[in-house]
Length: 123
Image (tube, rainbow, N blue to C red; front, side):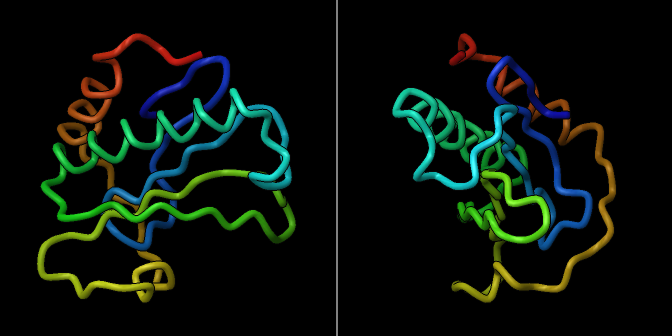
């Protein structure tokens, strides 16, 4: 767990497409973004920007892609942050790269937690 409050949880994907692949999961159930109340929508996307900046700083990545795919058996709104590391080709192929095994790196985890805790919680 990288961050948790009353609104959301933020953690690394168990089967990432890139090192640092992160999930932002709302605790309340919404099928997709169209169901989010305005204040929840604003809070989750403001938090996502903060998490993207934390990933950039901790991992030294060039970009962090944001996507949401709320389909399948669970069908629960969540955001995925997929870092693009240096020398990785640009483009949508990064969303469908083969998944890898998650490897915990305590230094990276602590750096991201520290960045996410710098500001007051949003909710």
